[in-house]
Amino acid sequence: MGANHFLRIELDAGVMDKTGTSVVVHSSTKAQLLISGAVHGFQSSMENTLHFGLGRDSLVAKIVVNWPDGSVQTLYNPVVDRTLIVKYEQSAPLHFAPTETSHLFENVSEAIDVDYVHRENKFNDFKIDPMLPWQYSKSGPGMSVGDVNGDGLDDFFIGGASGFAGEVFLQTDFETFSSVTLTDQAFEDTGALLFDADNDADMDLYVVSGGSEFSNPLAYQDRLYINDGEGNFSRSKTALPRIVGSGTCVRSADFDRDGDLDLFVGGGIHPGSYPQHSPSYLLSNHQGVFSDITQRNNPKLGDAGLVRDALWADINGDDWPDLLVVGEWMPIMVFLNHEGKLEEVSATWKTDNLTGFWNSIAQGDFDMDGDIDFIIGNLGLNTKYKASNEHPVSVYYHDFDRNGKVDAIITTSEKDQFGTTREYPLAGYDEVVRQIKGLEKKFPMYGDFAMADIQAILSKEQLEKAKIKRVNLLQSIYLENASGSFIARPLPIHAQLGPVRDILIDDVDGDLIPDALLLGTLKTTPSTEAWYDALTGVLLLGDGSANFKTVSSDISGLWARHASMVSPILIGDSPHLIAVQNGGKPLFFKMKSPISNSKKHEKQ
Image (cartoon, rainbow, N blue to C red):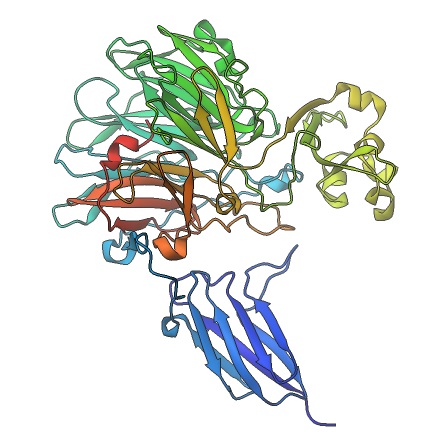
């Protein structure tokens, strides 16, 4: 018998993340495919070298390498029985038919070279709540863009994780940035807003404190930093009321039309009690001092849910800003503004049955009919979760084992061989018995648990006491304003490749019709699951009739695989985008086509 042969391939991606690179080796008798990845499941990982066993084949006709950004590299007749180093810099881009949308963005991150890397503190949510769908302690960083020192140049703020203070970056005349570090580093900065809090014509800074790692409620107190007009910030100790819940976002509008900016602050998870939520707040501005008027205005605002995003928009054309609120296990909540009094009208506007894992919301007149429509980001279809009206994703929660802590079991439903719908837990045996003490006695063997539905896992008494939330929609959607109600329809399939964490609306291609940029990644899934990071950046070009043409990141140039938030920013006189990454450097993209004034589309 002849000797067995092999080929080892080492990928050199340079500064690019090589995760997802596929390599196909064509030998004389077969083709083999391997994909580079950082993880392969629970407590397992991949080494950097890909191993191909060739058996008795001593000849390889070609190797085809597909890099994550679409570039392709083909190597012919390599020598076997050795390690071959394949360098990304020697690859060629995919050849597409020429289009007018090619290369709308240029990644200029290296040229701008901001000296900053977001760092995350070490905390593992799953040690406390093993059945969480993802971690909530790593929800940041918050970001906001604005001219903080009055020099006519855009600056920006990026929040820090607990243990790392947020930083303000001041733009110079040389199109570079210098940083100023804030003093507070004990908080998790999940949201941020540069706005004029005290009507003195400069940009003050509101920072939302969120996360889930703290037991002390004071660690969730939001902060307002007052600007002295020259970009120097000092924290006000009297401007904000006591806020003791984990927050996610902050949005401003003069909702009572008294001449100053008021705030809605979205409440996130109630730490240690998933899927229960912290309160949201409506804060009224009185000469730079904010008071909590949530209960007086509408208690439903405070109990909105596990909020991820919100925005103010005049949806009925009466010149009073209305409020839309979205989040996990939530419908799309609509609050009409009746001269400063907010009324919840989700049922009237037909959004009360659109429950999802909503992440983001943005506005624009996509059908050019004179009113405001919306694009709303959801979890997408590229996950283990499957949901519909007939078979929703559900969560049963209660202190099932009576240890003083809320237990939550997420289920998916399907019909058995007899046509009966049954709900099964998505978490595995190990996670369930770690969370709910005593179940290991009821199910001593893995096989006993394997076929158990929620009715078998929980007793009749536990089921009666359990609270239930359901999700029936996972697609990201276009929400059309139909004069008194909304009509929802899914976005194109490329927008469903992953969670849409942020959305930017702008006229990207210069045709005076709003387009949408979708970004998102979720890297905090359990160790037994892959990251949700297939949405590398999708551009939806509008046609004025609420139809969208999809432009993938390899064509548009907007490759931002791990970005979770994006904002327009002018660097010098040139329009750019800044995208922030949890645990990474900010990315900068130069817009290469004529566009509208992006700044008007930044969320407030």
